[in-house]
Image: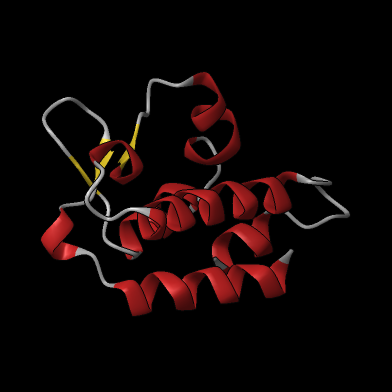
Length: 100
């Protein structure tokens, strides 16, 4: 998170960090919404909005990997159900809320 907020300040790149944080928060909340649902544990890197809002932002993918997502064979970010750390996801959501 520090990389994103440092590189994309409101003075230099208005709204970029905020959008990245909100997108990250949505992915984390989706995992917690239903941990057994694979679609909530998958981030399709081929999606144009994912590319624009988080993947092309320095540190954006690192935030997702930091909470347990990894790149699978299909080239997407994915989180195994048994690897979900609910406490870590909740803490990440709280940290991001303070940045927004």
